[in-house]
Length: 111
Image 1 (cartoon, one colour):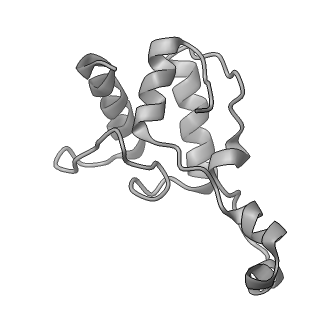
Image 2 (cartoon, one colour):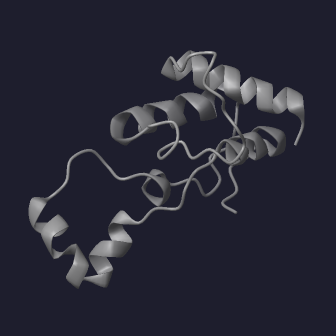
């Protein structure tokens, strides 16, 4: 991974999300946990990212990385007792480094 690619990713993130220049962005930052991209905003961001950089979708699936908008209160209350529900809400972190790799390879490949 090159510094030029990381710079392109961080510039895109700042432009798309409005993050201030002073906020540090690193390869290990999670879009959801560290950069607060969730739900519809995350969906729109990723669609824009894939299009902007001409990345083939490959095996990219939004649901693998992000929860959809809204939630069921009943599911949240039942989560401690249901492994299936916990797995539904536990997502693989999508990091800035993963975006960088996708740009360099030209296709999304789940690590």
